[in-house]
Amino acid sequence: MRIFHIHSQAVVETAELSGAMPEHGFVWMAFARREFEVLQQAIQTTLEHMCGAQIVDLHVSDVLNNQLPSHYDYTSDYHLMVFRRLAAGQTESDLSRPGAILHRSREKGGPPVLHRIDTSPVAFVVFDRVVVTVHPTDCAVRDSFAARLLHTAQSSLNQQANRMPMSPPDLMLRVISQMVDGYLNLRRELTRQLDHWQTELINPNTRFNNWSALLDARLSLHHLDEICEDQRAAIQDWIDALDAVSEPHAEHVRSFELLKVRSRDVLEHIERVVHHVRRLEQSAETAVQMHFNAQSNRTNDIMRTLTVLTAIFLPLNLITGFFGMNFENFPILHDAQGLWWTLVSMGLLAVVLVVFFWRKRYLGRSS
Image (cartoon, rainbow, N blue to C red):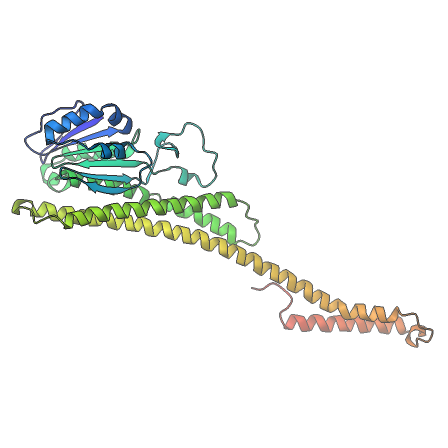
């Protein structure tokens, strides 16, 4: 549990729930999912004292649900955003319990980089001056953002004006943007892995046997595509909700416009992730198709060579069969030079056929 009081001048971190709302700024309360479940009653009481409202039971269930996809919902008192992060975890995650550390190595194949992608849900409950976030166990995204926030608070006042979150929705969008950028940082390693497979698939001198890993990678990329689509739909619903808000007061116009700009920026980042995941899927599919096309072309070359060899030896077999007939009167068969004339004729015929098929490019590998 980490609680921060954030305002334009400083950031103060406390370790206890307090029902007193500060005079300026807003409060960020960050919990691990198990902490939120245990401290649920105390958190509801604190929100009642600070905001005059509590989180409804249905949304509490959504916050505690590990399998929930990204989505957006709201009430008259707060907004709820559940966002499945795409970040590199320090340890592998248990697929049946997202966010829980997997203590035993995963038996499933596929590239290790896909195993390290953590797709656990992060919940944001955004009030007017309070934001409650519920993270997986040992969430690196929460800790890194909190460290950046504290570092920003210690910088000069001129830099703080543009770098400090101005409101709970602004903080939510900054955390989401960091989660999306965490996946963008994995693009190079994913691309390198798939490029390596493409090289093996296209190389005709190697036999590719890692089909199970390639299938696992394709399934994982398809799963990531679905997660990204849910993320984009959730952010788009949030943007639509902002567009439906009536004109704010004059003193809040600038902050409201900046909030809309940051929301569109987060949406653009998610669309970049969707585009990259789909490009990786297409690259994997194209590599498989090119592999089978190359194998088919190689098989066609082998069959063409065998057919040409058969066509060369077919007339030679005909000649030997002709001389193998048991006739009593066979003029050439009893000639002393008949064998040599026959061998020369067969050799010339074979050479002529080889030259003919070579000029027709029926022999040799296709370039």
